[in-house]
Length: 554
Image (cartoon, one colour):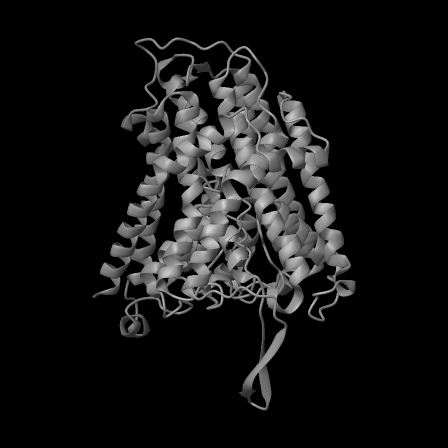
């Protein structure tokens, strides 16, 4: 079987699995966030944190809950790392330095999971399991909660109430993420992923020394790492490590986990707003971009330029021979389009245009299908922009899902789409202009610039993957990328929740003959075009200096 055909068959199998899970999971999540009942364990949690889950919140109160909870989470995870050397189960590792502890705390709380350290050489069992894995659940649940609040903004009328943050967050963990993660972890263990709390073992003799490996609760962390679109690896090699990703089936299963909730949330959205066709339109937009990027990645990575590529059958440098180019391309595109950051190949060794596709996938805003929650609310923001553009074309006040898109709504949407590019470009320019950050670049020229651009793009878009040619474990990068991750996560949420509140206060507008049909394929095409044009106009000059220049020169 040719490598191209193998890749196509894996893609078709993946699409089939996602299609089977789409309806039941999407409907189940809609029931979870529409229910008035509370499970017994949820009541215990509410009592423990002193929250009343039945109290409806307007958007400022909902935002305060998000920010307060996340701030406490950053502080807790930071302190846990700083005292690691005194904790049992630390495997003899010392406490984490302040700048790296800040970077890691910001990373995992913001659902980015950027790692400037070697996981198996820095973090013990307590920090890995009690700190990082816990945040994988909580940060994902926060993202879904914000998305659900925006959906309620469309669904409700004449009220500014968006639900209760504490109830939404707890339900996301208890009823969705936790049970799915248990099932996924058992599948990964059956595939060969490890799950233990063993210490450090010396294996064999290599050039006068021994190779050391430590165990850990890897399968359980791997499950929520992918399911919650987190991405941080237990080991430095991430999903290229056989303890995390043992074989070709586990590789495909992990891609399935990455895409499962983001795609299914479009069904949840359609169910909650009372129009499944609206959910299908958003799904079609996400799927079109995702499949299109995979095909482009295959084209760049399978292209035979030079004798080395011809002998290997494509750009095999940096790829796992267990997976090959086809599966590695699906994995890399899926992670960079979903704010996951897990990798099963070395992104820096992609062809110039292939690396550019990974960059562009993140620069779209992580919306195809995006992170859990963040992908849906990011796509709905772009839908509002597309409706506004369509309204300008025909000279009509734009409407979306029966709500008028007025001055306030378009200002909130515009602020949302401007924040992340500003963070990426300003900090990239600063790093290139100052003398010290440049010393961390492994390569010079266009590829070196791509390393810096990729790092801040990954941080600001809460992706967490790395080009891996950049030494980011410095005070400059630990601090600035940490700041970028926090701002890139929580500033957009301010405008999402403000937009949700303004929409919930409106009275629905009845559809007329002049209303744009946003459930039709025409709107899907308009939305795809708007996303690509806005992203291109924003980032093309920077991409031209990096991956495009490298790709055209090769």
